Amino acid sequence: MSNRLNIAKFGGTSVANFEAICNCVKVIKGNSDTRVVVVSAAGGVTNLLVELAHHAMTHVEIQKRIDAIKDIEFKILGHLAHAEDVKEKLGVLLSELDTLAFHEEIHHTDSLKDQLLSLGERMSSLLVAAILNEQGQKARNFDVRNVLKTDSVHGAATPNLALIKTQASRLLKPELADAIIVTQGFIGSDENGMTTTLGRGGSDFSAALLAEALDADSCEIWTDVIGVYTTDPRITDQARPIPELSFEEAAEMATFGAKVLHPATMEPALRQNIRVFVGSSREPEKGGTWLVKDCKEEPPFRAITRRKEQVMVTVKTPKMMYAQGFLERVFAIIAKHKLSVDLVTTSEISVAFTLDNPANSVAQRLNKQTISELETMCDVTVEDGFDLVTIVGNHMQSAKGCTGKVFAALNDIEVRMVCFGANPHNMSFLVKEAVSTQVVKGLHSVLFE
Ligand code: ADP
Ligand code: ASP
Ligand code: MG
Image 1 (cartoon, rainbow, N blue to C red):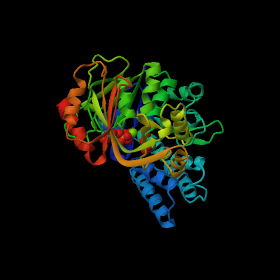
Image 2 (image 1 turned 45 degrees about the vertical axis):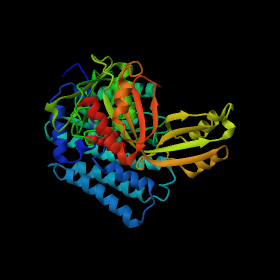
Image 3 (image 1 turned 90 degrees about the horizontal axis):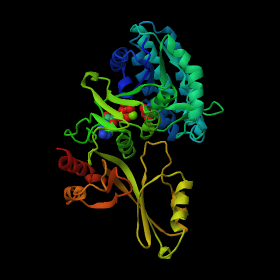
């Protein structure tokens, strides 16, 4: 057995069906340092669970979603030769799904929602461990909730790093001696043992947290693309993989919409200086992107990201002239409603800011209550239908000629808001969603092609 330790995380597409899981098995067997495998829910399952947890539905609609989930899991199970034991365990999880999906408190109790959301990862880890065993690699399914301890903010829990470290040394480390441990991303538990979740896409973060707690040498994020690209390859076929990125650049990209990594993934990696690799579980031979602390190159333009479904709020009051404390009161209301502000611009009597407001998120969305609280202080305008396009790079504030090139590419576009200068890594533009693809393609062509 190798002395080095690698954590390998496989995303939803990588564990979506039996064939995809077989590719993961090859990847796992291909690196003798891999002792811990972190898996997401099979592709599509978390979306279905989010619908069950968050939307009121008829009995028939609920049953339709349960059946869709069962179908995904049973199709994978069907490929196992010795399925009895696994089938029984899967059955227990599926009956928990039935109970929670029809639970009358499900839409009102956040802890129940998280318990329901946790089922996707609990089922996929069970199946992946079983398939590894059948394919000659001794593996054990491990309930990460005993190790990944968090606060009690359901849907967006914050990890308790000290406790995770203690629990990992006590419970997880001894398990690594004789088998590969297959565990769940995305989920954890609070001090009362209640299930929590880290937010959508959180499995990447889980893998990095476990890597940190176990003093791992590396962490691999296996997904459906061969690394982090200059922009989302779904937007333009001109996007190309970036061989090496700094943690800072990657964090900036993730925060501003590069879905390939959860934004918090780089925090544990940076703290412990753990190298992170991003590659495709379907085509591991094609290589991927290494995320490192210090990058050899620091180009002014590295990538372009897009975040959809942004809302712009403008608050205006003549009283703001020469007034103090207005911004503080506006942001106190926003903070009270747990909304996170991205871009801000201010003028003499008004402030405009953008909020992330995606429909399928478990995070808080802008609501009537927030708006009416703001209206007690000022005039409020809410506009939606925007996308945020961000150029990520280095030393942008000081690189001469940067802005000219960028604005020339945006010449024909109505740009609603611009943010530049808060940090050297990004330049952001708020544009109408109808033109954001054109904007990304145009900028990509000028900056990278
Ligand atoms: P997983 O289920 O493996 O976690 P995700 O769907 O969360 O995978 O992330 C992978 C997807 O991220 C890709 O399919 C791609 O469309 C999208 N993506 C967005 N921006 C980028 C980028 N800059 N580089 C690579 N992929 C990106
Ligand atoms: N299954 C969770 C989601 O879809 C977590 C993840 O895949 O990273 O958001
Ligand atoms: Mg993901």
